[in-house]
Length: 216
Length: 275
Image (cartoon, rainbow over all chains, first blue to last red; front, top):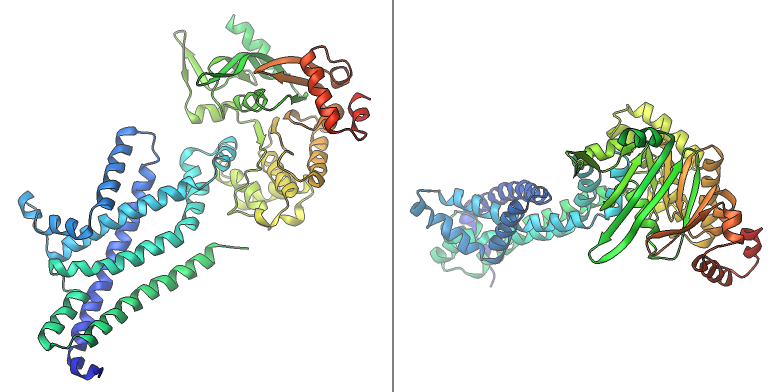
């Protein structure tokens, strides 16, 4: 009934699709992480216009579908003289989307550090920057590992919509195999397994990081 | 006039001149005048909401004050005056004025991601730029002073409340302050842990540290304070040596406050503070 030999010849194609998915997710998650951290740090500056700008960015990017954002970048880009490849649009779209979510997680992480700890540091002569670097950031990073992992796993799964703007990733590859071979169940089972193996690795890595961070 | 004031200020550790503070429509400090002399031990008592913690926090500008002036070791704290108007100082300027003042908080406020020793030496390393060896030498001495040398490598969540507060005191001491402020240092502690913290504070007092202690520990105030200050409604209602203040309160409000305290602590401690 279930027979993977029917799609065996497509194994290399699936492998390539998986690599594209892993690559695009890795690049987007790293960029999103850095951008999100930068945004969360900037949002702590006492400069209201910047805060409003950041707030609008987070609300817009978090409040609209990733698919729509990719459409606007890829199909709408040329209207503004921006001609990305599907891959570029994919990385850019995913990074901005990831950063919006992570900035919000990091903001909450910063706010979870008790203000008394900051007062103690101020009383000992720490400057604002040193407080962020030595008191707030280490604790914030520890707090945000579980929600950040959740968000990353969610975004890896959402990367399937990149197939709609023709990024040759895992889902696009698989749907093409299905339409060429008319074999449905096996490719999709394989697709599920592939996504799960990537997210499982992320979850495993996150548990290792968490274990190392939570001492005593 | 300002010259005279500065000369006078040099003798005192902290001077408050007509200090006022308002939170919205709520006036929490009403023109407080107070001089803390060098090596003086002052305990501030009063009902909750009387403004005593706010007063202490104003002395280091953790709270801003709206009226009056506060001088720390002769220097105006938190503001600069130019052309007759006053402008708030930068965080760095303020930190410089209060650099010899240490603070111990009700909630300890240790940093949970550092060990006891890590907490004590953090400012030596990060603020003063000492090498690890230099900082650790001072840090271990400070932990020794509070009787916790053996807990140097413990994280705060492995320490009792009393031990955490003693580490917090060591952290303040490591910076070699000339003035230490305590904001209800034993109020968050289980009763059986209060003694060990008060013991460390007694020891500091006997070594001549200038101390301002906001506290509910009347026994400690009676024993250690040179002067007790009773605050109510944002003002200093009465001040004087503990013997006089506790046995012959002049104001009805202090008398009532002491009566309430005595009836709550009926078993034997009355003689402790009046005797």
